[in-house]
Image (cartoon, rainbow, N blue to C red; front, side, top):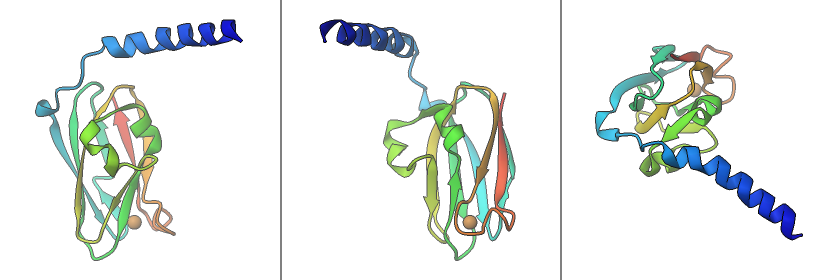
Length: 134
Ligand SMILES: [Cu+2]
């Protein structure tokens, strides 16, 4: 029982070290990107983000309807500011009607990530988009 545990500890340490060596994002340098949510569209529907640039993503609902920004793969590919983690549940940001939610996020892995509003039928009606991290 001891050896596997030691091996696991060694593996975890090896995994943790590079992450710990990275410097924490400087959130004071966050660039604001506003995403408007209407029925049924995101504006803009195409986000172009730079890897390792901190952002303040501001989601604002312009209508009297609840929407959300569901982008689990995008949020997995970066760092959410610790203070904003409670606003992102399983990669989904809920926005109440007429409300605004800001999430500081730094993408770290270049790629193309889809996002949708996962409320019933909303993405089928057009609430979807793409974030490109360069
Ligand atoms: Cu919606």
